[in-house]
Length: 139
Ligand code: SF4
Ligand code: SF4
Picture 1 (cartoon, rainbow, N blue to C red):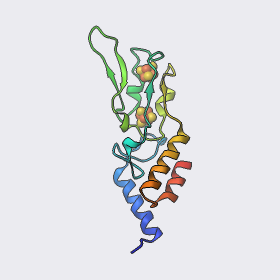
Picture 2: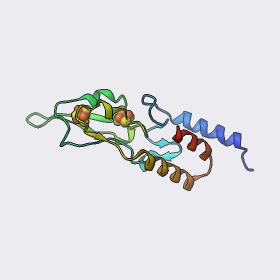
Picture 3: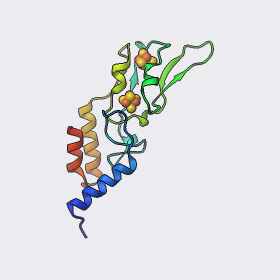
Picture 4: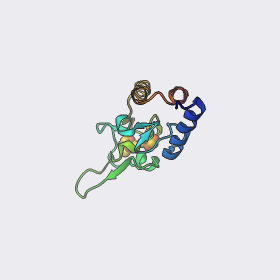
């Protein structure tokens, strides 16, 4: 039996609800494992630190991100610095930490390319909920 549109929409909402965490209001609802029905580790959205710019003792990104994406690594006798410890904990399309970095050392991939990739991955997986996806990623 083919599910009605409202059944499919309800299924998608339930799927999102069971997987969601939110970082501020900048990114898509997601978990470390799934984002809009796509395996999170198929979406290369996470911060990249330019260590030519990063200020060694600064910990602003670590303090700012509530999802534990960054960690401050320090060893006696060595330079201490922030690292991206849990890249896939980063909320897809959030880039909140960029503006808190005093050295402009954090970057992300293109938002447009990421949206296209998610849509493509969803398309290849299933057609369910694609109407809702285009609404979500366009907003
Ligand atoms: S964009 Fe930055 S602040 Fe937002 S979840 Fe990712 S690492 Fe954390
Ligand atoms: S906020 Fe920027 S400068 Fe500070 S530790 Fe993070 S990446 Fe480095």
